[in-house]
Length: 160
Image 1 (cartoon, rainbow, N blue to C red):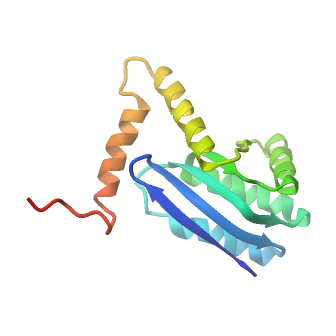
Image 2: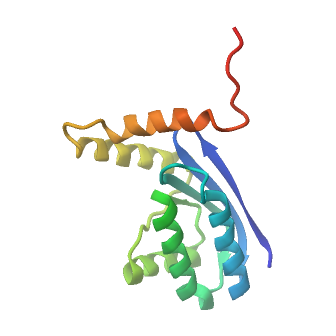
């Protein structure tokens, strides 16, 4: 087993970026990989969040693809509203698109985190327009993000 995921939450954007550094070669690797997501997300946020996956260092053995798709779909359904993939290698990208056809779920690929953030902003704006007469989702996210920021140890109130 060789791998880790470094998570970074942006209060300002209400989005988690996961820097995935994994070489998934065995079923045991898959279970540890999924447990890292569960450990990070479970109980951390009062709502589902948007997720950007930075996949430059992510590799998946094709023989694990069926079980990987099951775990991936569960993780995305349990913890996320939307997900965006950045710098996914060709083989893994092909498996992602095949999985989207076979099992449903999101399939997209961006060259940079900035492109993924721009797509996220567009998707949120489109969602806000589809909710006429209600508080737009982006405004809700801003309120939730502000409340969430207060729960993190790095947040300090001003002294003045």
